[in-house]
Length: 219
Image (cartoon, rainbow, N blue to C red; front, top):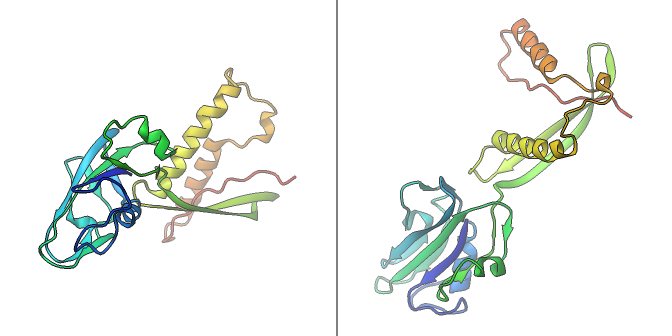
């Protein structure tokens, strides 16, 4: 995520630049929407330099190796004529959660950097529905259907796996001995997957992929 910028000839975010349509604060808000895939953690800098009239997009940003801009068509601003030069250094970092400007000030000593708060989550939205379902003779079961939308940094499947791993790591702290209580009421994941494989073998012509639902007895 973008966590700050340095603009040549600018000392505060409420400045305007001659020949540049958007104010600095508007450009900062636009850059908050920049989607970046970054391999390494820590802070890196991108470069945006342009002096020709026309619309400025994320495709005009120069990125180092290991950094990929996933939405190059994103609008940043517009230069009205050829003479004005737009020169911006863009501060990016890979992190988790949310960082406020106050949090970022603790890690940035350069007073010329205009800091931008950042939400590092790749999740755009999550929707879930619970339906009644049956498995064999069991009819008092529920099925959870989830729709996850991301910004492209991680796929919805990877986001779901990451979330499951995180929950598992947290919940394991509450049961360090890994003791199973009332195990007869807990579904066996291996059995569910084996049953799904058998069902797929029985229907070789099916074109769509079926995911094993998570089911449990209704209360």
